[in-house]
Image (cartoon, rainbow over all chains, first blue to last red):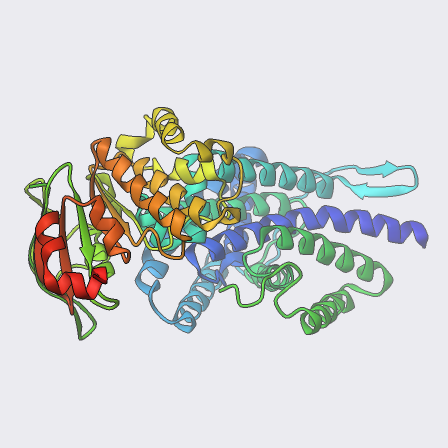
Amino acid sequence: MEQLILSATLNGVLLGGVLALLVFGLNLIFGVVKIIHLAYGQFVMLGMYVIFFLVTTYKMNIFIASIISCIILGLLGILLQMIVINPLLKSPRLNQLLALAGVIIIFENMAMVLWGADYRGIKLLLPVIHFGSLFVRTSYLVAFIGAILTLLALTLFLNRTYVGIAIRATAQDLDSIQLMGINPKWVYLITQATGGILSGIAASFFMPIYAVHPHFGSAFTLMAFIIVILGGMGNFLGGFISAFIIGVVTSISAVLTSTEIADSIDLIIFILIMLVRPQGLLGIRESR
Amino acid sequence: MLLQIEGVSAFYGKLQALDQISITIQEGETTIMVGPNGAGKTTLLRTISGFLHPASGKILFNGEKIDDLDPYRIVEIGISQVPEGGRLFPYLSVKDNLRIGSFPKQARSGFKKSLGEVYELFPILRQRANQLAGTMSGGERQILAIARSLMAKPILVLLDEPSTGLAPLMVTHVINLANDIKKRGYSILMVEQNARKALEVADRAFLLESGRVQKEGNRQAFLGDNHIKRAYLGI
C-alpha cells in the first residue's frame, strides 16, 4: 500500500508538469490580453486530433505530427485573437466569456461532425520504468521532462528577448508600453500564438497518455482553471505550485478511492483553500 | 517649427477638455506648460502622444500631420513621453526598463550605445541595473523614467509633472536634469507644478486654463506678467 501511494505521488508530480504547461498558457493570456480563455481545453482537444490523424491516416512520425499540431494551434490562437477577441477587447467581461463559450460549442461540434464521438488514442508500447520498488509510466516521465524543458525555454524567451520583455511589460502597464513604441495588438497576437503553441505541446504529451474525444477539452479546462485560481489568477509561480498539488492529489486519491471520487476530492480541496485564501495561494487581493 | 498645434479641440465623451489650442514648440528649446489642476495639461500631452485624437484642428510634427497616428507610431517618429509618476514596469529590472525603451526599430540596434550614454548621464542607474524598478525610491524612479524615454532616440520629449511627490531637493535635481537633456540637443515640453523653478530653465512658456491657452511667450514676458506672478509664482 505504501508503495502504491509513493508511486501515485510520483506519477502525480509527473502529471503536474503537463498541467503546469496548460496553466502557464492560461496565465500568460490572462496576464497579457486580460481575457479568460475558456476554450483553451478545446485547443488541446483539436491538437490531439491533428496528431492522431497525421499519425494514423498519413503514417507520419509522431514527433513531426506534434510539431505540425503546435504550428496549427499557434495559428489558431492568432485567428481567435483577430476574429473573436479583438472586436471584444473593450466589451464587458461577460460578453467575452459568452463569445468564448460559443467558440467551445463550435470546436466541439466541429470535432463531432468531422471525427465522430469515438475515443481515439495512439497505442505506443512504452515500458514501465522501475525505481527500486516504485514504478513510473514512461509516457508520464517523457511528458514531465518535456513540460519542464518547455517551461525553461519559455522563461528564457520572456526574460531574454525583446519580444518576451515586451510581453511582460504589457502585462504590467498597457498604457506605458505604447509610450515605448509598442503596438499592443501585435503583442496580443504573439501572446495568443505562444498560448496556442503551448496547448499544442500539452496535446503532444497527452497523446500517449489519453484517448481523445470531442469533449476531451472540457474536463481539462475545468481542471486547468481550478489550478489557475488556486495559484492566484495570473500568478505564474502560484500556478506552477498548484499544478503539482492538484496532480498529486488526483493521483493519490485515485489510488485510494476511484477516479470519479478523486475528481470530487480535488474540488473539495479547492473549495477549502478558497474559503481560507479567496485570492489563491500566491494571489494578491484586489490586485486588479 | 518642430511641433505645431493648430486649433486643437478634444473631448472626453461629451466633456470638452481642450478648446482651440494653438501653440508651437521650437527645436532645441524647453517649453514649460503651467496651469491649475484640470486645465487640460495632461490631456494635451495625451493628445500629442496619440491616446486621444482631436475632434478638430491638427497637429504637425516637422510639417507632417500626426494627429491620427496611434501612440506607438508617435514614438517611432520621434516623440517620447514621460507620463506623470513615471509609469515604470515595476517587475522589470532597471536595465530591462531601459531595454524596452529602445524597442522602436530605429533605436533597437543602438541599444548598447544609448545605454552607455544614459548610464553616463545618470550614473545611479548603472549601479541599480539589476534591481527591480518598483523597489527604487521616488526620485530614482523619475530619473529612470526620463532615461527610459531617451532610449527611444526621440527628438521631442514630453515630461508630465516630473517632480510630483518628490522632496524639495529632488525637485530641483529633476528639473535641472531636464535642462541637461536639453543641452544634449533634445527639445522639451514640460508640464510642471513648481512653475517658479521650471521657468528658470524655460525658453518659452504658456499658461493653460480651462482647456484654453491664456498666455504664451518667452520666459521674460512670462515672468513679467502680473496674473502669472500672482497665481503661479506667489510673488
